[in-house]
Image (tube, rainbow, N blue to C red; front, side, top):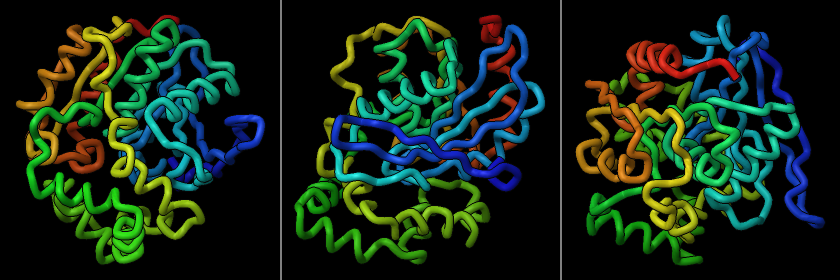
Length: 293
């Protein structure tokens, strides 16, 4: 998608004193009776992470994708980042584009943001397709991981770690565990994830989940949540950080109506890691959702 289309931007007024430039792209044509799709990337991601998915659906759907504030080529202001902030961004974008109803395809943190938005604005969401969503973690965070996040959350150590890890070598090491198919972690992917780390304000946005982890969790939502519409969980079987057998039941407490699909030979970045199987499943799901607006 981003290889074919020019980036577009809009100014988002977060508050009387704060605004941010947000990047988005769109493709496809409006079709009578068909609800548009909005793609939302995960933590550290960007529009380009959907490059193997969006083209497969652009001929049949109007499609939008945007960089969440603080990530990709969107601006990275010194604000309090959270799922709530991302949900407000989603609503601002839908208002800007005059979209009354939407199907959201989200990955990881983007999927968690979609759930948060759907809980608060269920009347707008026609469907949720959630690829390895974050936000509910159960007992999967082991002692070593908890210790690391504790260190990162310390102001001085966290900043030092960020400076040390914001380079292609460390980014590649960070991406490797999120892929089953290691050939996908190539130079192009690593550079895509490294470049935004050099932006002004990136340190603040990227460290926010470790400094304020509760702002990125869904535990506080009512179970079941307010969104009762079609929802689907698509999970990589080899996701070690968020293993499906532990996490899917938690999300189905939040959304009992959610169907669940586990794709073998795929890890956390399932949509890119196993893009052909993911696209096949996404097509089946979209055919199941009642598309007329």
